[in-house]
Image 1 (cartoon, rainbow over the protein chains, first blue to last red):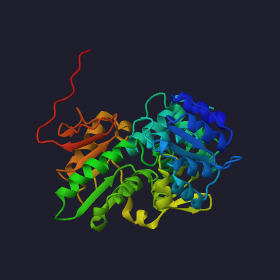
Image 2: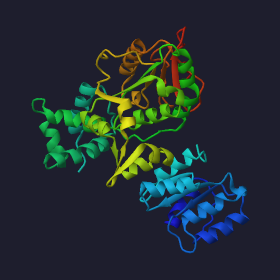
Image 3: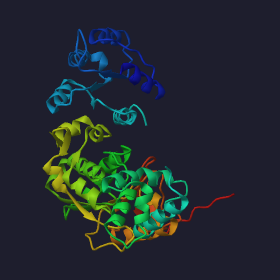
Image 4: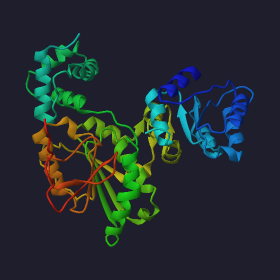
Length: 111
Length: 281
């Protein structure tokens, strides 16, 4: 899944880095403050996606970072929790390339 | 198996006659893609057998073929920018102009499965001032099947994943099993009715805003022109028409003038006729 998303984003012109879990993602972001977009799975080892969103949103350096949950979690309550924690968008698996492209447009990252 | 030229001609003559929509040569694949599922649903062995039955007296199968061929994919907030233009530019102007009557009438033509009119309804709810106004959205389509679906407001996960901001999904939808239903408040804002754009328009309250995006592309020049003229005749003279970004009224109806929004085809009725398009070849 991560590879597929990476390829999609590269085709859309993004430089893409990958992280295997939430803590690795947080460490990466702290050393790459100019990251524009983070795609976050809910279910990750060590630090889950929701915890990652909460941690990032407590750090003023990442005000402009767009965070999009990409997850198999499809309950409305979970979606509301993620948005409440500071996720900007939410994509339910399965998805298509068009879904990701639409969401990036909503986030103002592509035209 | 691909359909023959003769079979393609039968279908395109039917679609042209009933809906005014032009199926150009090379669209045989589209006929196959749309009619093959219909043949299965009807218990007919193949697309060719289905088309053969169109040679008989007109009946429900003809209607189903027209509906299958004229239903087009749509998504919530398609193209994003037209809804921004609506919210930031057009609605503030109309709120000012209609401050006395406090009424707005919106017509969304060829509304398919309802994503476009419901997106308009959600956009209206972003403007608190309109909460106390009487706002009607009329959504029309030639297919009674899609009208029924649109009225129900039930969408698959893939459909709500596309184009719909997650905040709107949480705010305006309820999960029903594996599907998502738009809430009663939004559904009550939109009235869905049958309308064939090729026929004279039925009487309607003059719309302040008309959405007819990515619809004219399916018609030939004479029909595009006739449709635009009928719309101009029915809409408020200070109203607005939204077409697809790549569509134009130029050389079709010289009274519409395009407003300067780069990725949104938004028109109003001008005081002077607009010059026809000129080209050098």
